[in-house]
Amino acid sequence: MKRASSCMFSLALACGGGGGSTTADTGTTTDATSTDATGTTTETGTTSETGTADTSTSTAPTTTSDTTTTGTPPTGTSTDATTTDATTTTSTTTGAVDPPMSLEDVVDGELELIADGHMFTEGPIWSPEGYLLYSDIPANTIFRWAEGEQASPFINPSGNSNGLAFDLEGRLLAAEHGGRRVSRRVIGEQDAETLVGEFEGQSLNSPNDLAVRSDGTIYFTDPPYGIQPNQQELDFQGVFRIDPQGQLSLVADDFDRPNGIALSPDESLLYVADTNAEHVRVFDVQPDGDAVGGQVFVDLQSDQPGNPDGMAVDSFGDLFVSGGGGVRVVTPAGELLGTIAVPEQVTNCKFGDPDGKALFITAQARVYRIRLKVEGA
Image 1: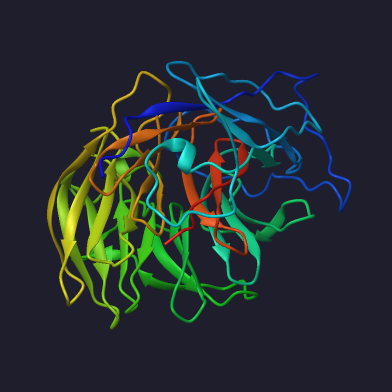
Image 2: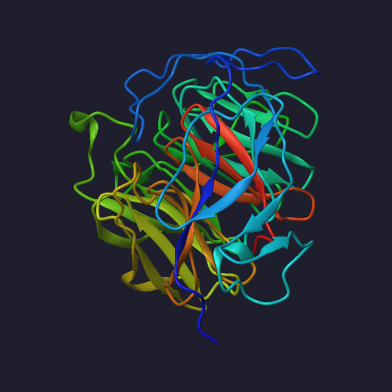
């Protein structure tokens, strides 16, 4: 069955009150400032002043054909989580048993602001222990957020980490801009070991994002966002593979700015966003973990702020790609279902919550959550 044509899913964000953030009822206010990121540049957009990583507000989603409403969610607002179209109103469901045919089959809740006051957020990852980790790159800090709590510093310094992932033993992997490496640490320990920091005797650029295969293979992207031009030693921006024995190999060297990276649910495909080219490419994963091919999977040009960046995959194989106007939802056939609109430029997204049916979205100084009818792969 062919899926419905794409649409914009506009999360109606009404402006409310002043521009300050609101302190949650529980916990204490934490400062999102930390060690300066000397010589480190963020990927896109502007940074805001550091402040309180707080708030939990939400707004109701409505569908529109051609507009995106932006603004700041009003404090303490919450409305019924229903989706509407021109003819019907459909209550949200608890789950999806068939592949989504439209964006209304995907979204099941309200866009909720869970943290604010950061500098530039990236790399969300949900822990099996029931909490979210994410990076604030310029603040040189990995933050932790859990339901009913405020976001608080978890690891500092973080090596100006960007993308985060867990390996098969539950250790935290980090793509570090400042360290120019992929690092690994046991949760609860400050010191991290270097998995890779060089390729053929030259320093990596600034590892950006990660994907982990079920056999332990780690794929990562290496654009130069985190270094100055005169610091670059490699003459390309690559996609790399670390095999289960720790050996580093090059997957592709013909990207402009490789960025977000994700595996299909069956791990037969590797998706990589090329930010400057405004598209996502796809590689065929071989039994030994090597990835070949790399043809364009979907073009995601947009007149809205943001280019393809971090991404996530649901259990049906749909891609959720950070990009113009919010999070673009793309079917395994490369068909755009629509855009989950977000008021700031989105940098990354990952599935989480205990049931895996929430999408956590990093967007410059903020972090959002939205409940979905689909679960992460």
